[in-house]
Image 1 (tube, rainbow, N blue to C red):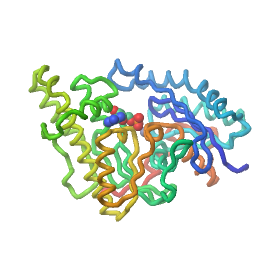
Image 2: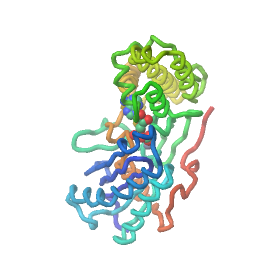
Image 3: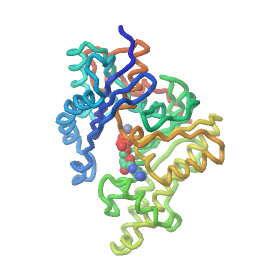
Image 4: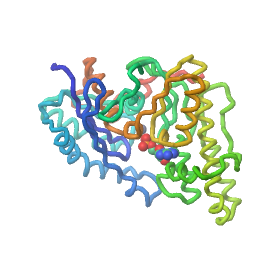
Length: 351
Ligand code: KG4
Ligand code: ZN
């Protein structure tokens, strides 16, 4: 097999169609993504059938576009990598079937990638305008927070990941989105809550910090959501509107408090000075501010990849797949969604 120096990658596990070309040092030659927020907004959440249909329309043109933009041909591509777990089945199938066909047609090795492993390795990505600190390396603690996941990982080495904390119910991004819907801020709501919170008082409403005081790394955001619903049910619409910024700031503070507390506990448990924040919620301005404060106070190396590598993106799938291909791992043409148990990719230590 020829050396794997350059891969073309595809991510279609949820509602973003993303294609990238990545080199073996994690350098992203090119990444282009098509977002679907506008199509899902009228429904207040992602509609799986609409997501798969949009992927099927956007994917091949994006692949051709990325190759042209990078001024490369199939002859320059040593490997193909595609997210095959976990995710919406219909969405995953579009990416997998497309990449299996391209692998067969061009005789290029293919590998299926765990989406979450992609998020965990995103801090190594670099491009013309960004690079992580030169001495950044394993092991590190990573908090992956998005609409679908909120977990803390001990990332010891490539392929050696332990889930050390996770949410028992809703993901942090899901809580942001549901709260935004309750106060009439639309979908996707996290960014709207963040904006409104900037001129709000985070101490005005006392929302619960579930499990924050418990001596473990578990999280829970459904109690917070119900508590917000109970409060809003008692408030007339004009009062909600008048206090919108304070409501958003207080709700956001409760989520950020829990995430920061659990990360501090993890740092203490693993005696680790390197931390990573990733996933769509890492865009939250208050969360970034608090993580930066914590890093300064405790003299930690904090890496928050640029947003283009934090939200769902093909570059992280490219780099992760490339490392596995370099180890000699490949998928055959029977690759399917979740072909291997997602649980098998991680160890669990949820004490
Ligand atoms: O990683 P991502 O793009 O997709 C997945 O869910 O996998 O993350 C999207 C999530 C949504 O729940 C969105 O509301 C949230 O990230 N989000 C934010 C902010 N920007 C995006 N949450 C809080 N504050 C933000 N600024
Ligand atoms: Zn994700």
